[in-house]
Length: 184
Length: 186
Image 1 (cartoon, rainbow over the protein chains, first blue to last red):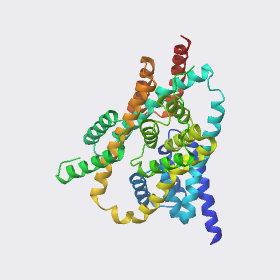
Image 2: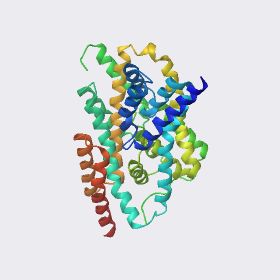
Image 3: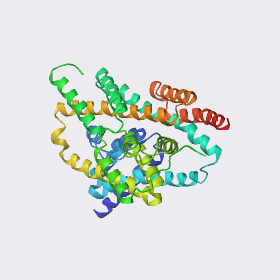
Image 4: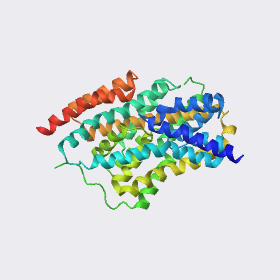
C-alpha cells in the first residue's frame, strides 16, 4: 500500500515537472498533454471525469492550471494535490528566477533597454491575442464578443475598478438572457 | 537615463504576500497575467507599465503559467528573492484550497445548466480584462507607431491566424528590438 502511494507520487512528479518546463505560452498550452497523460497513459481519470475537472478548474479562481491539483488529489489525496501543484509550478518558476537574475545584471546597457522595449509591444499583443483566442471558441458566440467589448470599455474608463463586480454582472446578465429564452 | 518611475520601496513582504493572496482568491475566469497587471500596475501602482511589460516579455519567452511567472517577477522586483517566493505562494494558496473544496461539491452543482451559463458570462468579461490590459499597456508603455505595428502583427499571427506563440515571437522579436535600438540611438 505504502509502495503504491509512493509510486503514485513519483508518477505525478514525473508527469507534471517536465510539462512545467514545456509550457511555453502559459499553462493552457499543455492542457492537451495533461489530458493525454492522465487519461490514456496513466489511467488516472476517465475522459468524462477529466472534462469535469477541467470545467471545474475554469470555474474556481486562480490559474486555470490548478487542474493539476485536482488530478493530484484524485491520484493520491492531499499529498498528491500538493505534489502535483509543486511539480507543475516550481521548475518553471525556478528557471525564470535564475534567468531574471542574470538578465537584470545588464540593466542600463543600451542593448538591454532595446530588448526590453522591443519585447514590450509583443507582450501587449499577446494579452490581446489571448482574449481573441478565447472568444473564437466561446460557446456564447456574438453575446460573448459583446460582453467582452463592453467589459473592455468599462475597465479602460475606470482603471481602478476591481474586476469582480463586472464579472458578476456579466454572469448575471447571461443567466437572465438565458432565462428569457434567448439563444446565447 | 530612463523615464521609468522608481518602484515603490515601502511595500512590505507581508503586504506583498497578502496582495497576491487576495488576488488569487478573486481572479476568476483565467487570464491571471491580466489580473496581476490590473492589481499591481493600475490599482496599487506598485510597478509601472513599462517595467511590467519588460518583465512580462522576459516571462513570455520562458515556459510556465503566465500569472505565476508575473508573480515571481513582480515579487522579485519589489522584494528580491523572498518576494519571488512569497508572491507566487500567496497567489496559489487561496486557489489551491478553494479548488479542492469546490471539487468536493462539484458533483452536486455540475448538473445545473445555469451554472454553465453564468460561467460563460464571467469568461466573456474576463476577455475584456485581457483586452483592457493589452490596450492600456500598449498606450502607456509602447505608444509609438512601430510598437503599435508590432503589437498588431502579434495579434494577427497569434490571435487571428492561430499560429503558435513561440515561433511568432522568435520572428517578430529581432525586428521589434532592432526598431527599439534605432529609436534609442536617435
